[in-house]
Image 1 (cartoon, helix red, strand yellow):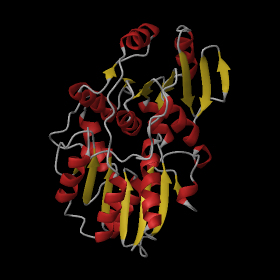
Image 2: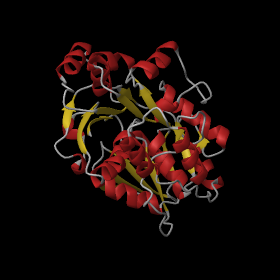
Image 3: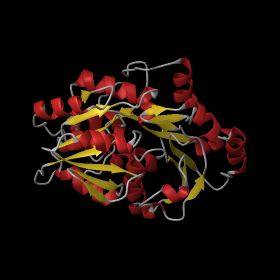
Length: 341
């Protein structure tokens, strides 16, 4: 079986999931070509697992100070270039297209009549999934951004029979708890976040962002995003402050880390995640990062119970290789029996 695997490069959650799936695909000697879009190639890091991957501009959302900037989004995306990328991508040699909400591979597969299997959090948004911040445009984009004939959604609760537990690196384990708080708010203004954290000198924060360079600023350790370093600091953190993206919060639940989360304004997925977290009582949600809100939460935060997740990626790769991509009900039942979320 020869597979083209499209990965959405906006944020790091899609790439983190794909790394884990790539490991098991490689162990099974599957011939996979990876296509990554949505982020400039020079801004990608720790990509060795994907080999000589294809890079395309794709489509992405521009953000500023924790909000989607729709005007910048319009100017930064070229629909004509996107259409040309779809037309130029030949899938003649591939048996299957997998897409984690990556639009070039998904639309090329649809156009050329290839089987397209969607795997990702966005494919979990059915009629029973908590929804917030929705609009007609947001719903349309969720359905049509990266269409798939068959879809496996990922979420913290089995909202429908095509939804599996999150894909995370299950070798990730909590280490002896440190005294630092991991802060990962890549869509916020990093200077403003540092200033807020500096007003809480009794706490030690490790602030990660692709925009930062390593350094110390009083009680805040500034860190440029690095896969291994981030995982190590996450494993030993006393708590985590982050946006409402799916993958990092899934890792926090697995490790038992208290979570303070602020959804990206204007993004339906993150607002919906925040609503689900509140309904499941898994995190504290805020609409703005302020010194008072961070301080109040840290003063009240209690140890969180770990919610170990099964090795979804391993089971999913085994299922993919069986080739019957319509039949996912038994896979879901099996994995939810093993999940603690």
